[in-house]
Image (cartoon, rainbow, N blue to C red; front, side):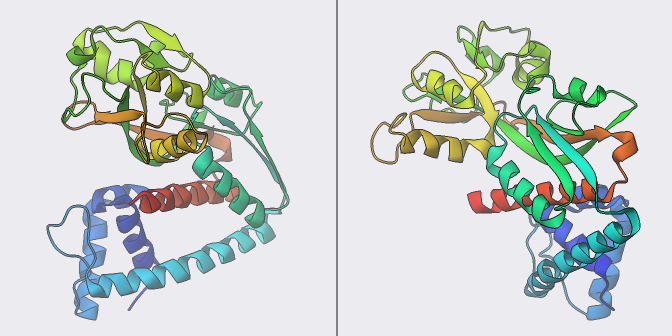
Length: 314
């Protein structure tokens, strides 16, 4: 009656927040996944989800099955890893490069879990390709690259890790502080603080400012902490992923900088446009490596850690 595929489906729907996203993650159609869940509900004579709720909310029966999924699926994944090791051997190499400069809060726990699962795989993290990781992947200097950039190369494949919202950050007391959201024209006269990459690689430029015909003067820095300090001190505005900001702000306050009173951050966050400016964080790999068991496991570990980080943020 109850199958592993049902537990995986339930877990993915809760993790991603919708049937549509879960179906894409599981490589099935939305209608097929919905049909699978309806059949399970009919067989067990229960309702798994509260209808017409957004985001998805589980019924008591659905909550109980999710608890089972959270216990069973890790054991199934461990068994699959062990079988893959027996079949393919334990060795390999995973050299990872970052084009995401705020990733350490989830990446380091992911790497620790990966080392535990695959101790024989040679693992390394490169920071020397921070602004050109995809080219390093093409040149075989690294084996995977974490990047928000789209991949337009037939020899590479991009695996989605997380969809996230980019927020505009401004100093406290800024004229825009308190607005429900900002439009591109609201930023005229501002200096944009960014990493040192081409404007067309910056989502705030490519998908927000440039379509409105607006280009801002830029100041660049390679270090996220410095970017935040520059904003906090009134040197300009910037855009960062929503998921990265809580820990970065906590680090600023813990260092005794960036605070305007107890518990008060020196920066304010604003949505860009009424629906927000959204991006996707991806893991790019060479297409020939897609079938490697340890590579597939790393993707799963990273997705789970990002999901858990999202849950911890509330």
